[in-house]
Length: 387
Image (cartoon, rainbow, N blue to C red; front, top):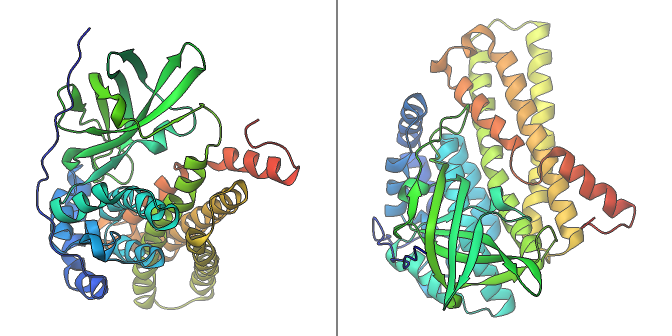
């Protein structure tokens, strides 16, 4: 059996001191260049590495880390606002950062609310510039991959898809399924160094939108994970507390990005509309876009407020319902913006088409359309959400 030890990864950069007070000023200054580089990456299908490196130099990867641990101390609502603002400039950059950010805000919540000992990870993010990569969107409740028990730990074999930020990531927050002789299948959660022997980024991210996120498959081939690294164990296909917490924290952060992309595409469309001779059809279409945008803002305000709730079946139901409403409103804003832009908006130079394509990814995060409706229906009928 090929057992390989986990080799700690070294950060690409040390992080600059995060500053919660001036992130808006910074984004206003560097936003146009982030947009330009993001568009170049979209055209070439390359990772937005330069954008993320610049954001790290300004401390954005540690904005959510408590100030006493070396971070920016920006609260949850502020983190959502930051990602929405960043999404207006470039969707791929913002979505990649959101995937790291929710992996920071979950341990921040655990430390603040539950007194959990998560200082070590949070300090590494702030002091060493560690970047976290999530596989949760692809694993979700069932988990994926295989864990084989060996002396002192497990050997992991898996292929993790949609691993945003994988080209520059340091730690993969992931899971694998162990067939326990007594309990049956158990999902094991653990961090894994992206630099470990046996971990390979596949470079297969070639998509309709969000082309710069580097959301490649990550192949894990016989990597040893010690018992001490197992952070949680749960039954598969069951709504464990961990997933109620992840839903409550991750979805508002991730969908703040789509609200920001909608801000950008709406602005593109309005700029084109102002250059045209007004007619009733154009004004009606702009009005339809504005109605969709109003719906988006209502859903955004309600969804981001959920980050201050308590993890529960009820909170997850509210979060996932609002995630659907915001996503559909963002897609509608994008569709109406394309109508407003008309022929001029069809040109890539308008900025509309990239944002329109990036918005399409809002369809695919958990819980997707029918699964969310299934959950909501079971809640309404007083049934178990695990059925």
